[in-house]
Every structure is written in structure tokens, then in C-alpha cells.
Image (tube, rainbow, N blue to C red; front, top):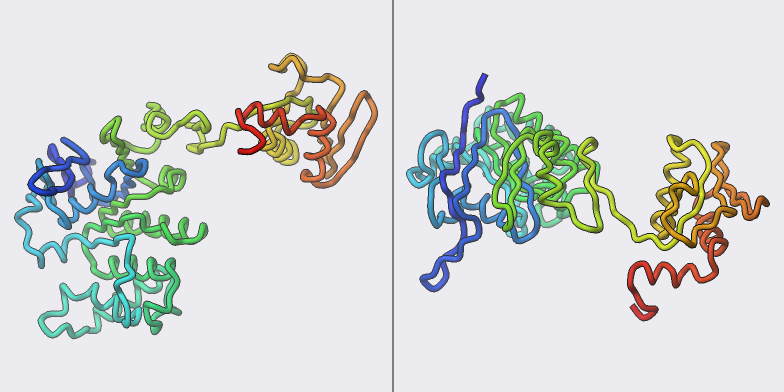
Length: 363
């Protein structure tokens, strides 16, 4: 069954007017948002993500085209109507001071409280729910200026939820949150989209998190424009790699994760069970130190690779270095192994690392 479209971009051009001239950031953008879905807007800095979000939220006018909200042009909405249709969370909320957390959430109920702004029982219950959903019940009596950046961000997200709109837009909502809070917040927003049939639209730099929790992805950059689809389809089509992959990083479409591509100065033979955690972590530590682990001399890509130096990971909690058939050292921590491996492979290992990265000693 086809989901209801809540927002449509029709040949939308975003940007700014300055001294009578138009500065276009995104041109002729076409895409749709749907009820019950969380969509993440991804792209590099300067791609125009915040500008697009602000245009869709009616915070700034479009330079061309149109935004349709529930089959009606955004231009035709009155402010009070918009307040009951779209709630917005921006990255900067330092201007909210001398108010308690409860009072901030009460502002979210203002479209429903009438001229005098008096909270009814239903309003109070909604505020209580939102505090609990976001996990900030213990902050309710605190003044906003006494909160950390992450706590203030959670309050503003709770306020947007309390506004009880069918559409919620958020600009970098996880920017100030610690890792567990980032994950919890994205999962909460996804659950809200599903359980309450809301349209959740957010810009973020948390690329790998977005690929795991989003129903739809919007990719935006200056070179490729706007591309939309499910995370899985965009991975399969190579779109994610096209927008984000660089020489020093690679994308794995199966796991939807990026990894750093390290410069390699030397290679070393490594024995053990390749699927074991010890082996994988040791291999990662060697690569970080410009040493590529290989399983046989057939894999060697460098003429300088020696066949008489071997790192052994036997699965007993220890790491062993063998040089010319003799065990040189046995350690229980990877960090103790790394320096010894480097100096054993070649005396001028540091210079080899510099050569690989095309660096001088003074850089």
C-alpha cells in the first residue's frame, strides 16, 4: 500500500538574496516525504542541507519552484497553521534562557492553549510524556542556562514532539549528544515515525547511524545534486560510495560502514585464525602503524617483505614475534607488540612510514 505523501519538492531552488542578486545553493530539487517514515538528509559541509531544511520549514523563502505540504503550497500557510503542521529543531538554541525545562516544553503546546496560554490537563500530560520519551524527566525544573549543550538539545527535541505536529524537522539533532544518546535519540525518532505515523525529516553528519535507522535517505551535494531512496537501494546502486568515498576511505555496502585506508610502509607475515577477535584487532593495529599483515608470501606486494619475521596470534591471549625461527618476544597486549614488530622488520621503520605518506621529518 502506497504511503501518504506529506511533503513534495517541485523544481525547488534554494539559496539567498543579497543586494538584489540571487545566490542559488540547490537547484531544481524534486523529492517527497511520506507519513510514517524517518528520512535523513546527508551530504558534505556546504552542500546546502541546512538551507534546504530551513526553506522546507518556511524559515526562508525559496528562490524558485515550490514546496507542497499536505498537497498545499507552503506559501499559502498562515503562521498559526504551520505551527500545528511542522515543528522544527535547529542546531543553535543558546537564545533560550531564564526558562525552566517545563516552561520550554509548554511553549510547544502554545498552538493549542489559546490566547491566555493556559495549560490544560491534556497539555500537562503531553509534556510529561515527552519528558519521559526523551529521558529528561530529572531536568524538568532546571533553568536552560544550567544545562549542557547535549541536555539543551534533548529539551528542544522534546519541545518539538510536544508540539504534536504531523511533521517534525530537525537540523543536526544529535550534534551535541554523546554516542549512546545519539543512538537512543535516532531510535526514538524512528519509533515516533512508525507508532504515531509522523513524518520525521532530519539533517545529520552521523552517516553510518543514518544508514541503520532511516527509512529513506536524501543525498545532497554540489556535484551530484539530490538523490533519494532507501539506504539499501542507495548502497546497492553505489550511490553512498559515489557521494562520500575518498582515496583515504572505503565503503562496505554489505555492512553500510566506512573504513580508513591507511598508508602502508611495510608488510609482515601473520599467523593465526583470521576470524578470531584477537587476530582482527592485531591486524588493525598493524595497519594503523603502516604495516600490512599478510598470510603468505604469495600476498606480498613489496620487494622488501621478509619471510623470516612472523607475528603469531595463537588464540591463548598472547602475541608472539618470531625472527629467523626464534621467538623474540611474547606479550599479552597488542600495544607492546607494535613497537617491537616495527623495529624488527626494519631499523629505519619511521623513515619508511614517512616515505609512504610523502612526509618529511619536519611535517
